[in-house]
Length: 482
Ligand SMILES: Cc1cc2nc3c(=O)[nH]c(=O)nc-3n(C[C@H](O)[C@H](O)[C@H](O)COP(=O)(O)OP(=O)(O)OC[C@H]3O[C@@H](n4cnc5c(N)ncnc54)[C@H](O)[C@@H]3O)c2cc1C
Image (cartoon, rainbow, N blue to C red; front, side, top):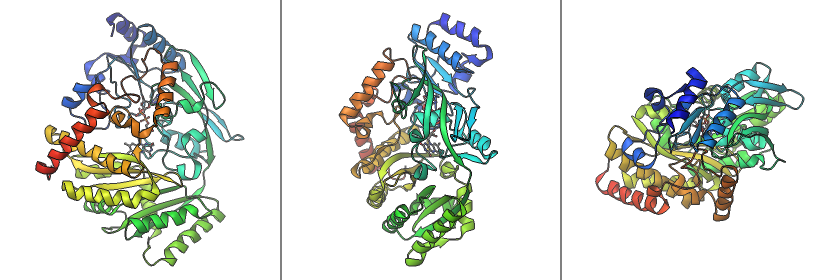
């Protein structure tokens, strides 16, 4: 990056801009531990400068400077993604959006809130709860994840089952384009809202969103233990087709239950079968009806074991601790898959075969986020301090994705690391359209470049597939127990 431009930015933004190596290094990674050996071969993750704008005007000024000087810009908010989505792939400016926060307008008639993009979901929840209101949905990373960050990803999580995707709840957004122009974007503008969902910061910077909200209702929580994945699916389908839609439904497979139990985290001290957690919210009449639905399922089928409600409430309290399993690590590796729920038993069955083949434990858990789809996380323990073994283990992430793909699934999120599998997420015409949008809004290619649309050359789909299959083959023969 041009030294003069860098110096001007440091002078202009004072202690909100830094070129200190120590501070820049903090932005060169996300939650995924990726060995330097691998990362440095593919991408330039160390930004030249980190800037923390405080408002839309400053975001626009920074974008104008970047545009005039062809400098890559990587937006970063909570940094709670794991595919290098918010890590630079081509150095340049790292725009830290965490100072752009707060609620700017609440409309209790329309039941919407205008909120700055760097506000976390927990901050918005606290603000609304004090007024007897709540967000319709939120990610299970809510304490760190921001409103803008989740919108730029897929936007499915807790509450999506009842209230739909975040896209369906957002009325408008304020966007700063790569050339610094600012636009209010709605469903009716050109470009429209849906361009920006899942765009992973590659089309512009979102500075404010108008989001639908709901009344803060009472909740009821249930946990059901099922003997196997087939019974789990049958119970899920009963719950889905019942007249009261759950707010949230999550599940845990047997291996995950065992691992949680070994760490002392099992909500019900269970080691066998699968577990479904079902959370309802609504008025008293809805909650009573929900209770009847669950009692009906548990009472009619001897194979369904209802866990005491206090335990189910405890499980709900722990909803933000999805990474608890890491305690058994030192690291966990894994894949998150968008999977048709009807294929969940077949998927888990093949995952179990894969675990035997590679002599490792694979733990699966997930959320049912629509009547048809779940996000399924399948993970295993690894040790990032043993670089070579760790790289061999990374090949198993692709193998988990292969199982998901076999059953109609695809990666949930792209960034750098899932970009070789972009063809599994989008059909060719859809991908062409996405690339056209990118070209239209970011003709200079400065917005979060080097990810999402095309994989870096070394891990293009062919190289990635061949390389990972070879590594996995070697891992299978000589790496048992790695
Ligand atoms: C424990 C845990 C639980 C999780 N649960 C869920 C879940 O339930 N559902 C789910 O979908 N994901 C989940 N995630 C993944 C991740 O937390 C979410 O996608 C989250 O919403 C990302 O928000 P963030 O603020 O951390 O964004 P970041 O990680 O900072 O950024 C995400 C992407 O958006 C871009 N970006 C961020 N803010 C802006 C902006 N204002 N304008 C333009 N681009 C921007 C970045 O460049 C990057 O590409 C989870 C992760 C963890 C670790």
